[in-house]
Length: 292
Image (tube, rainbow, N blue to C red; front, top):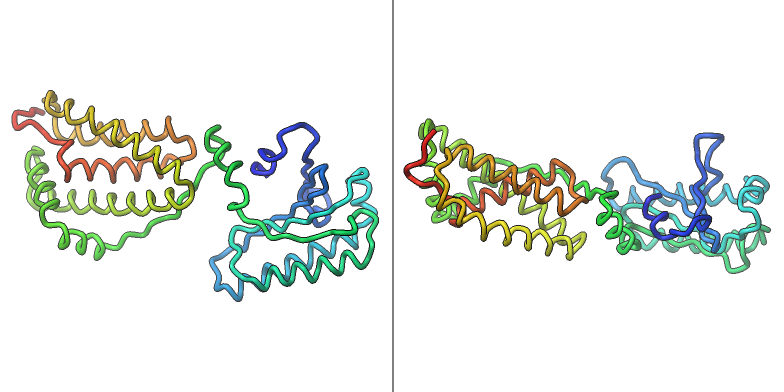
């Protein structure tokens, strides 16, 4: 509903129909320009065929309510006639759903329902139809991306290590300056940091695919922080353990403040992944005279 409220900003342009009192009558909301909206999200990841069948059945059921709830809808619509019934769903990957929608739309037109227009149509929509509204919500901090969980097997980390020996040597050299860490502990820390790096890389890729300007903003923030970090590290005598933690926390807070669409967890993942990059690529380093 947040996306629709961003599309219809003026008071009275859009009305939500709560489903808590005797159902939603086949629409969850409608605009005064004649568009009705119904949302459906299958609960689990599904093969295309299974997802299509569930979407088809849900569409059929809810469009049918335009007929069975005619009197109730007329009372709620207040003179508005529905010209477009939008079926909103997270994933649309079967043309058969489009075909089914057109079939059901033709059936509704043939009934000449008093609360539907003569050119009544059914369309399938996803979040991709609301890019402008999504960006507005992100800028207001009202919409979180909720990036996908990223399982990162140990094998992927070992493969990265084998493919990037110079970067691994740089990280190991810097971690050798961390007091109180034995060889096994340094190796475990390095592997955990690299796991965070790979998780962050995947999440950055998802941000780029979802909203390229947001991804570019992340890169700008990173570049700005790198320029200051190198100078700070040259001047710092802080304990390397504290410096690593402070660097990650500071960058996390910067991301959260500047990119309000990020959740706490995603900002933290990006920050620790970027901190690992900085360990591997020079800006983050420790003076040999660092003290506890």
